[in-house]
Image (tube, rainbow, N blue to C red; front, top):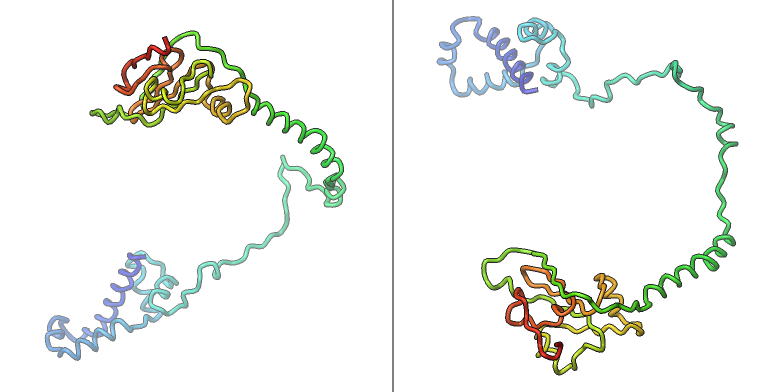
Length: 262
């Protein structure tokens, strides 16, 4: 488009200059023009309208076909209609079947083969009441039912690094959960002394339906005691004796076991 604008301007200047300066040297003529005459000349150039003969004569020198509508549009001599209004609407003469095509089925055959789906409300109600709801109730009962957990047979700690820090800030405890059987759970007043200041004791009663059972299932607790400790740098899973230690001095160390658990 930019190239076309330049072309039109060159054509315009060429034609106007040829007509204005036919009497002598253009530079000498321009020197003799006053300011008002120069303004008038500029207006003549910008408002000049090409004739068909002028366009046809100048266009080939710039690689444009004579009578091009693009030039006429650029000069405002042809309305700038949307391109889609100038396209001829295609005509469809018929549908031709290819060698590998199939015949288009008769609409009546399509209607006959269509089976309208009708919802049997009574059958749905019967299914919901006799099959779906009883099965759902059974699943809820199973989820709430407490599962007895065995005692851990070994002491083990699993560490998973979360981030890397260069100072003691990574040793800051964030969360500390201990799942423990009622037989080994200390009294409330001794919890902090025995297990640490940040620990939360979750006593797991095998025959009671409590929220603790659902939490234990969600964390995949396999045996008791099991402890989940989190710092800003690492995540720990402790089982057995390791779950009963006090880690207040250093959450990344091996911990200290209170005589109560020995």
